[in-house]
Image 1 (cartoon, helix red, strand yellow):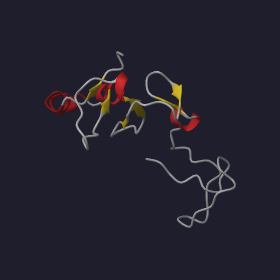
Image 2 (cartoon, rainbow, N blue to C red):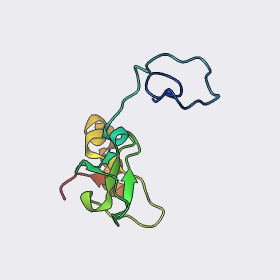
Image 3 (cartoon, one colour):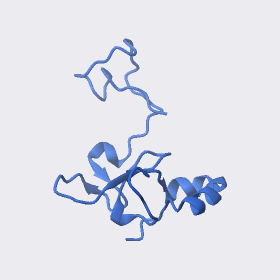
Image 4 (cartoon, one colour):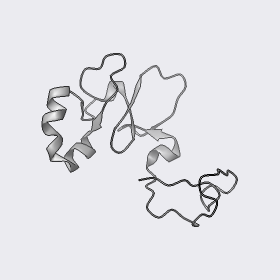
Length: 107
């Protein structure tokens, strides 16, 4: 649930053609720490020299360093459900265990 911020009070200089009339603020948008250039449980800023692969949670779309999550990942297998999103959706427990896509932020 994210709406375009083009030409509203958040981003006045960029414009797209999707919706010409904008609300001053998209009140339903959630701006997590990714919007500040910070990622993962470690809350580190983006670093081009970092060699760790990044994975995104399929629900909240937050990014996590591979070294800070548990589970086994193969090339092309990038599904991740972070601990916070899994806790909000108990029905996912079987899927998480069967796919080993649990992210717990232990490391």
